[in-house]
Image 1: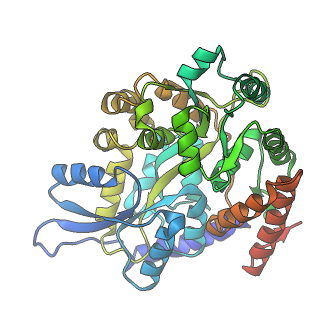
Image 2: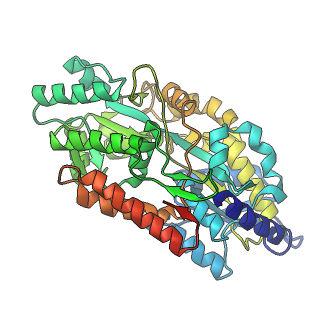
Image 3: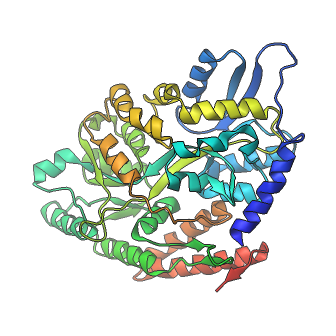
Amino acid sequence: MYQRILAAVAAALLLASCGIGGGASGNDGDGPTVITYWSWISGSQEMVDRFNATHDDIQVVFERVPAGTAGGYSNMFNAVRAGRAPDVVTVEYPQLPGFVTQQVVQPLEPFGLDELEPEFPDWTWQQAALGGRLSALPLNIGPTVLFYRADLFEQYGYEPPTTWAEYRATAERLRADHPDATMTNFGSNDAALFAALAWQAGAEWFDTATGHWQVNGVDEPTTRVAEYWESLIADDLVTVGPTFEEQHVTALQEGTSLTLIGGPWTAANISRFVPELAGAWGAVPLPAWDEGAATSANYGGSALAIPQGAEHGEAAAEFIRWAATSPEAVDAIAGVNTSYPAHLGQAEIWGPGIEAANPFVDGMNLPETAAAAAATVDPDWEWGPDMTVGFARLVDETTTGLDRPGGLGDALRRWQDATRAQLRQRGFDVSG
């Protein structure tokens, strides 16, 4: 049902895009076509500057908007509805289905961007090609890895954990050896991180294979993840609180929080908040649930879309193609953004580029680790049709459930039930 709904919506948008909905671009013969690009991603201005310096027929004006879930997506929706759509927008993968079902973006087939499919990993393409139509072109992805204080691990005689059982054992040893330190901070404000952990464990929160929406926030893999982190929290082996806020940053600075779970983009955040720790960090694969069965998941990343009503669709598509596939685009942002490119060709040159441009990353082993993680992401994960609301609800539920045994599992069940009810209210066919 989900795929059929998305296909029907995309087909309608396809027809619109061939008419007045952005299928034509023009400059009235008076110089380059000027398009607008809305994003909040670090390096966007640098990327636009490089594009403008190398293109005469198209010039891009970058307009910074708040982060998507902090108001950026609302701005995009409102602009489209008011007939003031920009030409290109950044959309994260969890939120992209909402843009499609609410008819905010155009399919990209009329612009020939679907021909790029062989140049992207299958699982990445599936995150952007919804209902049989390409709704956005993948820009970057977030194969999840473990960042750790390599200097302190060596000083303490610890080895980076390869399984979650080893991770807990190391946390217990750390607590015994250094009572003021913990293994990590469990980000209470980050539903996307918990989703990535569940994804890695084999969860399927949303499934449309039967033709109906199936929503399961308490399947066995998710429950396993919830119980694992509940036990770490209960035994004071990790701290709990917002990631990269004052208390967490202080712990990083003092060396009392030794690991971070994140995508490659996290390296830029670490360097921003604790620049004095350059050379102290390493990156290794995310611990596996079973020995020898290394898997990862996607945590973060974004795609570029053309909103419905964009004035210069062809020019927008040319910019999108360049941004998502050109080595120059990767080079332009290497000093400020460590996100892993979705494009296979860009990924090949990304590692040397960021190590040369960003001393904080040099020696971290991030390129090799990220490439290995990207190759082990489970491709079967689906997102729901409104993850902006879904993530906000999940944060609310889990935050109130972390202070008691079993509270995280109870929070996930409440989130599941509320999500099912929301989908039914919107007219989706939900089983269970």
